[in-house]
Structures are given as C-alpha cells and as structure tokens.
Image (cartoon, rainbow, N blue to C red; front, side, top):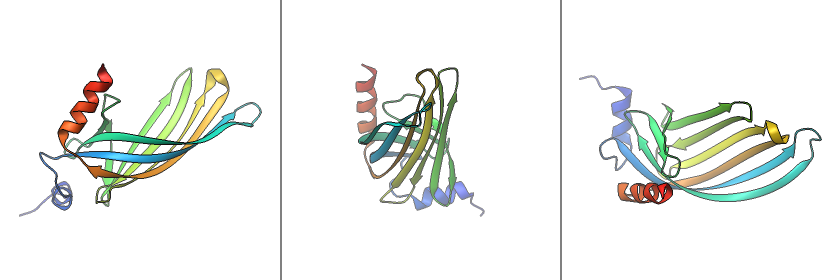
Length: 147
C-alpha cells in the first residue's frame, strides 16, 4: 500500500488527534525600529511573547488563538514555514515563521515592516519553543481575545 508524504508526517508527529496539533509557544523577539529618512535607530528592545497555536495538518493551516484567521503553510523535512505579507498605502511587511514539527517544537521568526505614513521601519528576529496543550486551552484563549 502506498502512503502519501502527508500520511508519513502524521505518523511521525506525537499526540496528533484528528490531524490537529495544539501548541503553547514562548518566543523572545529582538525588535529594532528605525527612522527611514535618517536611518537612525529610534528604539531597540526585546519582547517576550506567548501564543497558543492550532495547527491543522490536513488543511495546512496555522492559527493563533489571538489573531482569528488562519495562515497557510508549507511543510518540508518536518518544518512548517508560514509567510505573511502586507503591502498597502500605510504598511509594507514581510514575515516568515518556522516551526519544527518534532518535540521540542523549536520556532524561529523574522520580519520586516515599513510604516509608510510614519517614516519608520521595523525589523524583528525571534526564537523559542513550544509544548503540546489540550484543545480547550486554544478555545479558552480565543474566547478571551474576542471579548
């Protein structure tokens, strides 16, 4: 019997119920904000963030409980890659998020953004790790962020 690569992926990931994986991710981002006219650094800081993710391995979507709509992702060598791009009159941004699908579920993220109306650019680079959680944790955080 032939199995798809997607089936193999599901067999390799522990504790996947109904092709869904729920993770609590803790990440530390280094952020630099620069004036695009003078190139001077306006602010530089580190920000710690915790997110609860719902990963649908069949639909290949990833949702943050605080954000609402899911992002599409690709999978290669047990590594999820999700990209998010915006380009409008006010903002141009390009973000890449990567998550290793094997414990300890290491994550990396990097991004750039230009706030056109404020002559500011932002670069961020972060890394962290995730742990499996129950679906109820995702649902609780999602309901709290809606209210």
